[in-house]
Length: 265
Ligand code: DGL
Image 1 (cartoon, helix red, strand yellow):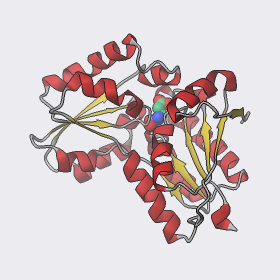
Image 2 (cartoon, helix red, strand yellow):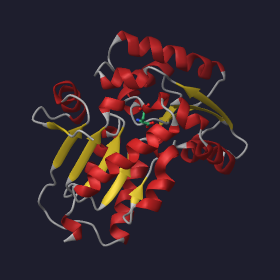
Image 3 (cartoon, protein in one colour):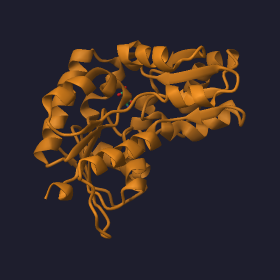
């Protein structure tokens, strides 16, 4: 039965878990298969061709595991690979993009900062987002090398996280922004530190909730929603060492019983 199949979710590493937790919140009955491409993380410093090849390999793996829908829980990968994946696979694919549109709606002073990877900020999709929804608002992009690696190592509460974030937030604060977009799925795990550094008057927005709402809409539209009172299961895979990735997944997913399996793809 197609609706009994899992939803496949992937990212360069553990960041996409910030999207998966929103999907889980809205869809308690669905089985979810997550792939963390930790052996190739971070994507934000790679050539688009490399990211595209990884996106194909991972999608192949998730489709082979029966995925009925794919969620690209990575802004960087969505920017590079969303169109190509949609052309190749005959199944619904949901991507993610920085929440520029909601930020433009939310800003009071017309000044927004966008934190993301260099690949995301350099992509045509990002430029087109700004052109379509910018609406006269000042949008300040800020690439944040190093943050993904910190989250990958489980170090989001370490002093390094705070000092790196200060480096990236200071120029934005100097621009008097009142809204910050978290345009990388790793960054919501740094939200407490970011909110502490910027203070209460600056809104911090990410796309996780909007993506999970889109997943519900698309599953509904294709008649793929699982209707049961049973709780869905989660399956976790990584291209790297499970011994390294598993403790971080347990921490971020909030379940000490999580098992991460290795898939060499
Ligand atoms: N978490 C991903 C994103 O949303 C990828 C980050 C990276 O690997 O550089 O962009």
